[in-house]
Length: 103
Image (cartoon, rainbow, N blue to C red):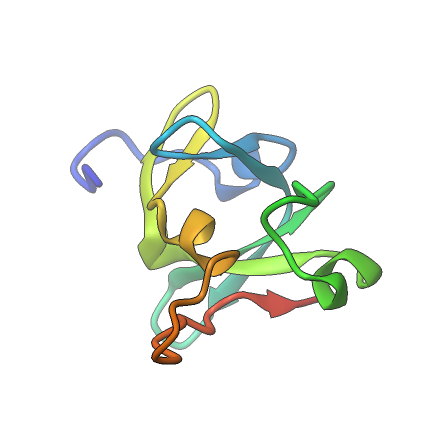
């Protein structure tokens, strides 16, 4: 992500739709997780989740938190790695990335 662009208010992220880099809708940004000690965004709290991507636990909760390191681009929408899509299809060896956390 280009960190040299003009600074923006982080609240402008709230309400933006989130898509994987493959164009699959993931959810909508409801809130932002911050690390105040390091003055950094660490995650995006999503709601209105794509039911096909998230398990029953996430669907029955208020949403999920996506680590900010997965964010590839921010514009009119937020683009995240396709890792979100792979969460729904854990491989047989148990090498599933458990970063998605129900909110």
